[in-house]
Amino acid sequence: MNMIWVCGVDEAGRGPLVGAVVAGAVVLDPENPIEGLKDSKKLSAVRREFLYEQIMEKAKAWGVGEASPTEIDSINILQATMLAMRRAVEDLAARLGEWPSKALIDGNRCPELSIAAEAIVKGDTKEPAISAASIVAKVTRDRQMIALHEQHPQYGFSQHMGYPTEAHFAALKQYGVCTEHRKSFAPVRRVLEGSF
Image 1 (cartoon, rainbow, N blue to C red):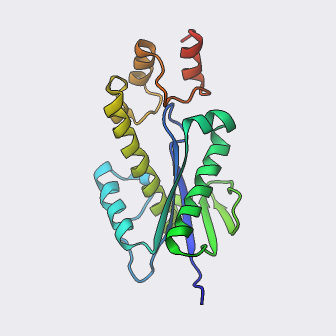
Image 2 (image 1 turned 120 degrees about the horizontal axis):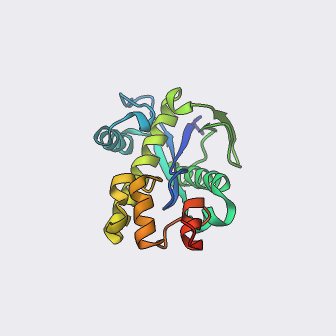
Image 3 (image 1 turned 180 degrees about the vertical axis):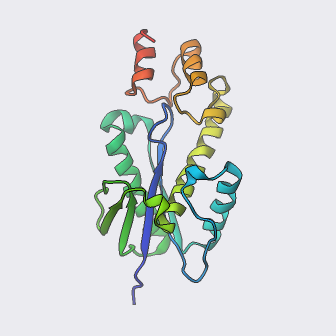
């Protein structure tokens, strides 16, 4: 007999100038609650890491999906976000061994899924499963940025996580664009065009 599983879905990394957009999907286990879930942006990095480990240990299932900078440049950030969310739900379904019954999506749009989906504005503050998904997405993406920093330390990715900060702009101006920059984003495009 199939259980009724509801997964929360959220993304991290729509605004940065570099790296993938990452989505998380989580089905929480009501018999194994996780205390302190909230929007990942309202948590310290240490607390996010702690809760991430709790989610990995206690959730019924979780999944991660991403869309690369090349995909972002090809289909735009909104469509890439939807793609990452779909991939996260597919990854979760593979780990769960079945499709969840429904997906609760943070925001005002739903990706195309083969299951029912509901968009919830500010869902990461209203639905614990979405909060958990936001933590999975954010920690996963931050870890990617730290790894990218090791390859390209001159950009300071471990400090700003790829977001458009003054330090990032200065590094772009000095060093140009790396392969992981989103070339369709205006500040990066201006560097490529020599008009930054």
